[in-house]
Length: 160
Image 1 (cartoon, helix red, strand yellow):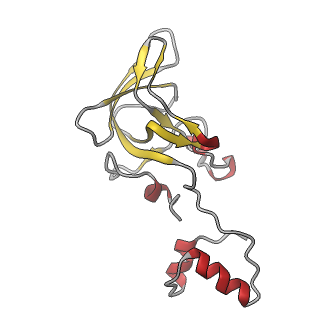
Image 2 (image 1 turned 60 degrees about the vertical axis):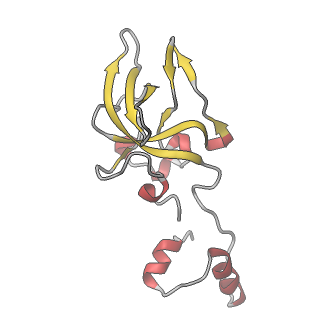
């Protein structure tokens, strides 16, 4: 059985690290097979606000201007069918690491510069079984109150 540390802390007054808790549980006869953090191995993933989104003619691509909390908007080419202006999304900035230790770099897609990647939950390595159906064929849309430039992990409980 998988148990969320955050959920456990809501139910029980726990004031130890996850490692210490797993050790204490093991010594009382409760088998702890392992402790994992969903965000492990993922880096430089931030909230982005899609300021504008234009269709690229004769392709499935979109040219997006995204606010990632920096001084200037970041141009990102995205192929997700549900990307649109006005939403908050997961952005992997250049240098980010996503699933399978894949490193995101600046690049060109069909001659257009792309300064990062708008990510789906699948690209973060999350299993299909926990991905909401409405986002299974596209990108995850973050809450409206998500602040551009913030880490995405607390918004998705991946820091648990």
